[in-house]
Length: 408
Image (tube, rainbow, N blue to C red; front, side, top):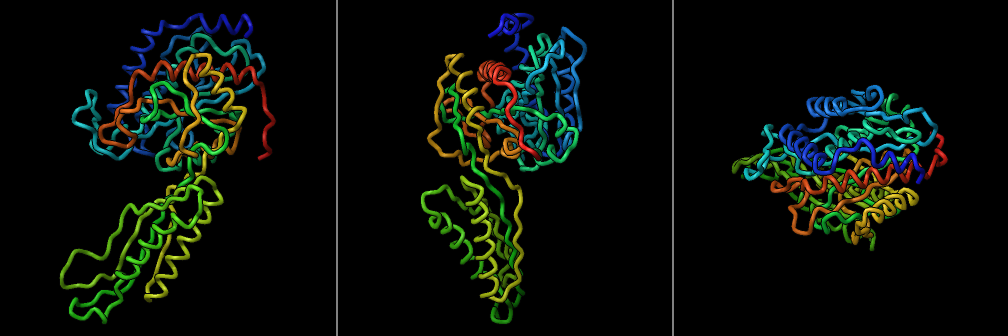
């Protein structure tokens, strides 16, 4: 580490207790005003206001707003424009369509949304990095902090990449983290290759014809097709060998509640997950094939649609090395996750397909309420370790320099 970088790591930084209080207050404020995917206007405005308010040693921070919807990016160049790599950190703006736990001391004021995945904490940590960068710019190159909309629906990263202003930022490296309940606190979980599974939602709608319940033969009920499809889709899990290939039925509906009318339509919703994009495509094709086969057998019309599609998140090996080195410098435990990959999905995979990068998990504790649970709340004691990890990763990426970029 150069003398200049070592000095930048010490100067103009608030003491950790002050930073902890600032970020905890910000996290609770974000928690109180959650917004669903595509609706994050007030969240983005609060983040932009926070970033602009941090004390700066030079000029004002450049903030791009309206990226891919309500996304924003804060750009921190070297003070003297010294050439170097562009390092991007990404976090998420959106919350989940879940009710708040009555026990939460800083409850959501939005009855239709709550931060039950920890995006409020991720935003607060990235704002903590901004706090340091505002006072002490990077020694070379640029650091760009991205607050992405609509992660929960799998549409936000794609919207960013469709925005020319975002693509023009042209990072050399891109990183993200996610808090992970069920793992030792402050442990760092990462691996090269597939880190998080790809997934998509499938909606199958069967159309027949109703009849009087006394004369079911006069209609075309989708009841047998529905029953067959539920079994067929569940059995797809065992047809793929040792690879992660999971089909989960999340909803099924047969007609409308009535005693005197046979059903004329049915709907199945399922989630498909796989550890490889090719396996995911194969599962989608097989799901569609079986839905059409059932419809033909029982003389029904059928529509099959795929929604909320997430690619597999692939981690670059060099980026993973930087994450592990950063964790070791902070004396944090580095773990190769037992799940290979994690079953949950992240649209961050679209960004690592665009530029080299990696995601890592930060353990939230073995007994912490799981993600998407009504009892979940981001643990505030992760804020400072998260900030320090991200700052160390930036330093390693700056030293790594500029990797070759794909032509795209």
